[in-house]
Length: 123
Image (cartoon, rainbow, N blue to C red; front, side, top):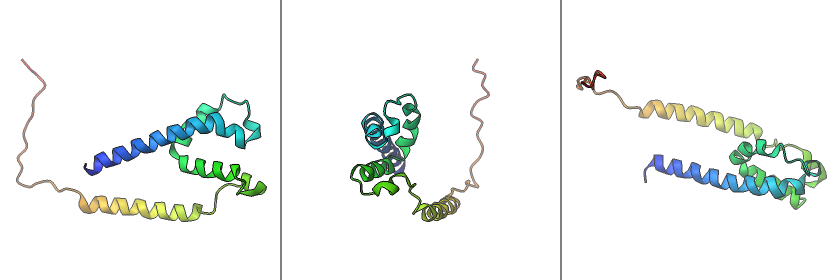
């Protein structure tokens, strides 16, 4: 398995797990953790793309609220403690990916002659 296949497989796995979490959370979990969302089914399909992407955070917050580990005030407070760290980490990661891309890019072979494939006329 090469890197591309592993990346595609990882993204498919992430999407499948996200789809399962979205199905369970939007049908069962949302009613349990938010009283204002009970009976409001029209907006839930709009949340599917977000839940697909951030399903670990959805599961973590759902677990916190269900077990009352967050407390009453923490239930409505956004998770902001790691925002600054994640912004710095993502910025460093983007710069590292760009630098790595420039470092490992392929150079065009100087001795290769251009070849005309076809003119488009097949007569």
